[in-house]
Amino acid sequence: ETGRQSHTFKAEVQQVLYILAHSLYTDREIFLRELISNASDAINRVQFEMLTNREVRDPDLEPQITIEVNKEARTLSISDTGIGMTADEMVEHLGTIAQSAARAFVKQAGEGAKQTASEIIGQFGVGFYSVFMVADKVTVVSQSYRPDAPAAMWESSGGDSFTVGPATRERRGTTITLHLKEDATEFADPWRIEQIVRRHSNYVAFPIMLDGRQINARTAIWRKAPRDVTNDEYNGYYRQLTLDSQPPLSFIHISTDAPVDLHAILYIPSRRERGILERRIEGQIKLYSRKVLILEEAKDLLPAYFRFVEGVVDSEDLPLNVSRESVQSGTAGGSPVMQRLRKTLTGRLHKELNELAERDPEKYRTFWKEFGPFIKEGIATDYEHRNDLLKLLRVQTTKSGEEWITLATYKERMIPGQKEIYYLMAASRDAALSSPHLDPLRARDIEVILFTDLMDGFMLSGLREYDGLRLRNIDEGDLDLPGEVERPAPAINDEQFTALAERIAAILGDRLKEVRTSRVLRDSPARLVADEAAFGREMQRIQQVLGQ
Ligand code: ADP
Ligand code: MG
Image 1 (cartoon, helix red, strand yellow):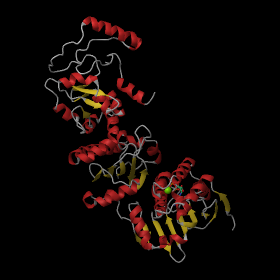
Image 2 (image 1 turned 90 degrees about the vertical axis):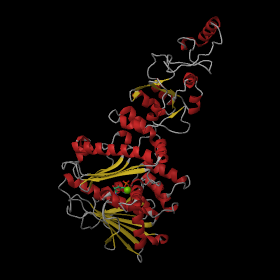
Image 3 (image 1 turned 180 degrees about the horizontal axis):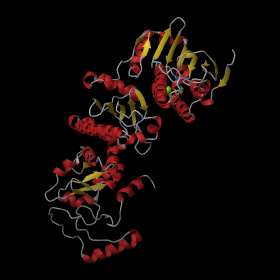
Image 4 (image 1 turned 45 degrees about the horizontal axis):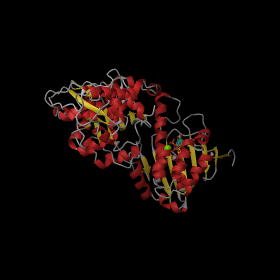
C-alpha cells in the first residue's frame, strides 16, 4: 500500500511482546483496562489542551469512549474522542518503551508468576502492549488534535515489526481494533465486556458506551452525597484508582459547596509499599476542576508527611485562569483557594485518624505500624501541625509491654513530682530494656519511653517538649530525678575506686572524658553517659545506622 512504512520494535519491546503473547495467560482481561485508561488519558489531555489553546480540531466533540465487538469477525474495537496521535507520535509512543521499565518487566515476569499479569503490567506501564495477550493483529487509526496533521494508521501482528502510514478518519481521536486470537473469542462477547468494564474501569470519568448505552457508573462518586455511596463503591473506586489489591484502611469523603466548593475522597492505604528512606512515595492525588483533570499528582494539597494518602479532589472554585503553566510551575499551590482546600483536607485527615484510633484501635495499630514514620517526620518538620501530629504519636515504654500509648497517657502515669518526660534510645527493644541507664528510673517507678525506630532520632531532633514537659534522654550524666530512694551502700572504698578509674582511663585513653562514681546505678556495674556538650546525639545515631 502507498505510503506505508515498516519499522522495527526496539529490542526491549520485542522481549516484552514475546512474554505478553506467550507466557501470561491469567488475568488477560486487563488489556481492556489499559486501553480504556489510555483513552481516558487522551481525553483528559485534549481537555487540558483546550484550556489554553484555541487551535484544536473538533473543539465541540463530546468526550466519549466507545467499544464495539463483532463475534463473527472476532474483533473488538475501542474509540475515543481524545487528543489523537500523528504518524510520528505513533512511531514514538507505540514502538518504544522505557528501557528500565522493560528490563524490570522481563525480570519480574521471568521470576515465575508470583504476581499476576495485572500487577506486573500495572507496575511497569507496558499498558498498550498488553493487547498482544489477546490479539494477533492490532490496528490503530488516529486523528490528532492538531488542525494540520493528517490522520495516520499503525498496524502490527506483534513479533518484531509494525507499519505506519496514512489513513482516513473524519474526527479527532483514536480507534484501536483488535483481531482476537482464537482462544480469546470471549472478548468479542458484549456481556463479558460489560463485566470487565464494571470490574476494572467503572469509575472512569467519561462515558464508556457499548451497543448504544453507557456501561460505566454515570456520576463520579466523589460528587455524590456520602450517604448515597456504598462501601463497595468506595472500595471499588480505590482499587481502580490505585491498583492496590487490599482495601483501604480508611477514607474520608467531603462533598460540600460552601464555604468553598469541594468534593474529595481521600484514602489511607492499608500498607505502605516502600521504606520511607528507600524511595519516596509521591502523593497520588488527582485534582479536577470543572470536570477537567488538572493534575495527575497534586502535591500542594496536603503537607508532605501525608504523601501516602491517595485520592481525588475536585473543586469548581479554582481560578478560571488556572493554566497549564501556573499548575505545572506550582504557582497554583499558592492561590488562596488551594490554600483553603489544603487546610480543610489536612484538618479532616487529622480528625479521621484520631477518630480511627478511638473507634478501631486494631486498625490504628496497623496504621501506626505502616505509616508511623511519616507522622514522626511531620512532627520533626511541620511546626504548624505539631500539636495535631503529637496526638497521633504512639510510643512503647518500660511499662507498656506490647501496647502502644500516647504521650497523654504517659503524662497521666507520671509519678508525683515528675516534671520531665524520660526516654531512652536504643537499637531494639531488648537492648533498651537491658540498659543500665534504666536502673535509677526503675528504682523510682518512673516510666521511660523506648525509642528504637530510625525515625525517632529524626523526630527528636525537632521535638524538645510535649505539653510543657521537656523530653529528657536518660543517658545524660546528671539527671535530677524526682522521688526518694534509698541509696545502696558503696561496694568499694574511695581508694579502690581511684585505682579502678585510673585503669579504665589508661585503657580507653582519648576516647574517654572522665570516670565518675555513679550515684544512681543499682543493678548494673557501670554506664556510659553522654557529654553535656555533645550535641545532636539523635542525628548521630541516624548517621550511624545509615553507615555514614
Ligand atoms: P502509558 O499509558 O503508561 O503512557 P501505554 O503503553 O499505555 O503507556 O501507552 C503508550 C503511549 O501511547 C501513551 O503514553 C500515549 O502517548 C499513546 N497512546 C496510547 N493510546 C492512546 C490513545 N487512545 N490516544 C492517544 N494516545 C495514545
Ligand atoms: Mg496506559
